Image (cartoon, rainbow, N blue to C red; front, side, top):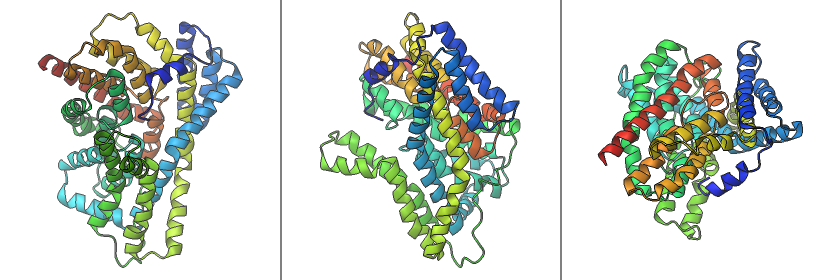
Length: 465
């Protein structure tokens, strides 16, 4: 992901699946989204089917050949499942091991003993921010979900009061802080200083995550007062367990993929030589797939064996963990298919065409372009790459600090209002057991708050630096 270039994106955008005019394409986007929303809310159709039909409708409205639309949808579905599906599956296995061994209970009991009441949302945002620093958003979610759901149920909290801070911590890290792919690509495109960007990113991230997490969760819990979905809650271990893993062993297992990915990021920054032997090793062990797989394998011993599991019981735990996520995989994959249909239809290029003649400050321009592409395509990474590429010439005469702020402005814009064309929207909806309207009121609004608040602090820093 970090090797993606602006030139590659431009090449992709230069070959849309349709030659429709911008007006027709804009109408097609609105119509495709409307079809999805109506099918889900009015006809109660399964989200997987609604996203599939909505993608076909979008291509038809945009004037694309049916074969091209189908190819775009299936390619997007396949790439999304390939990139996220295995991670979700490994996360589900790790979550089941945590639950069945009693490890998740141990973590929850410790958290509830140390932080309760008003302190709990702050504890969740801190944990999520630490875990989310080196992790992809999707990986962070699958690691945090068992803890979030158990804390909400055991502590009798509204799911939003606990879940929103965790989601905010993960999302802010994803959009603003290197070594996440979006910020790294923008740093490369704008020739910004990584260390300065990281330092300023942390300054912006701290107040942003507080406002979008613990503060906003108070209102989100009032708007959508729901309990954790029973089908997703890790069940308590059987009563025949004589012991359960220690808090230290459980926490070490959860943090193992975090440490491996962070180690990879640090080596990449310090060594910065793909031919170096150490970097070759850390690139492998620090990849999301290997890091999570390592956590699962280690967890079989630190969690399963520590709880006295036999080989048969371990195998049964793994098998039972996969069934509940089948629907989530299909929905997230279809969301990726809809996103790819939008991108191949030329929506990103359409937004860039509109923005070429905007006469506004560079920081605000980068943010607005990223917002527009995010809304149209649903992809934060595509929004970041596109916006960074467009405003790159403006960064040539900027100071080191302002170039870093431009990176952060683009990253903040890429998080704006996640909705039905974003696979992350469906991931949150399914894990938290919400309907589309509830997800918009909580997750989508939270993402918008992150984007707007972060941009406000970026503009403030631009006046001070």
